[in-house]
Image (cartoon, rainbow, N blue to C red; front, side):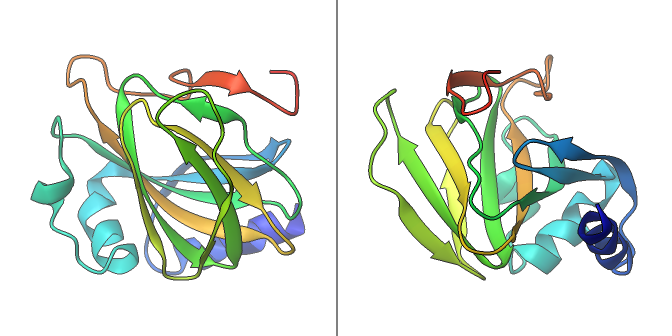
Length: 160
C-alpha cells in the first residue's frame, strides 16, 4: 500500500486532482484523474495528441493504472469505450485480439503507446517489476458513458 500512496502523491505533484482510487484490485490498482484535466493529461502523457483526435463522443476519462509484477488483468473488452495507453514506467506485457482467442503476448516499455478499439480483447500483464500506465478512456456512447461495470471478462485469474 505504501508504494501506491507514493505513486498517488507523485501523480498529484504534477497538479492532478485524483477524484477516486482503488489500491485493492488483485492485480494492483488505479487512480482516476479529474476529467476537466484531460487535456493537460493528454499533453503530458501522450506527447500532445490533439484532444479532437481522441474524442469519439466528446468525453474523455484519464486514469493511471498500477499493475503489480507477475499479475494479469482479466482477458476483457468493453462495449462503450476505446482506450489509449502510454507506458509511463516499467515494462508490461499486453495480449490483444479481435476475438476471444488470445494472441501471443507483446512486450511494451516506457514511452510506448497502445490504441485499443472498442470491443478489442486485451489483457495487461505485469512483468518483473510494477508497471505504471497512463490511460484515457475514449467514450463511444455520449448518452451512456463507460464506467467500471463496462467490462466483459472473457477469462479472469481471480474468478470475477
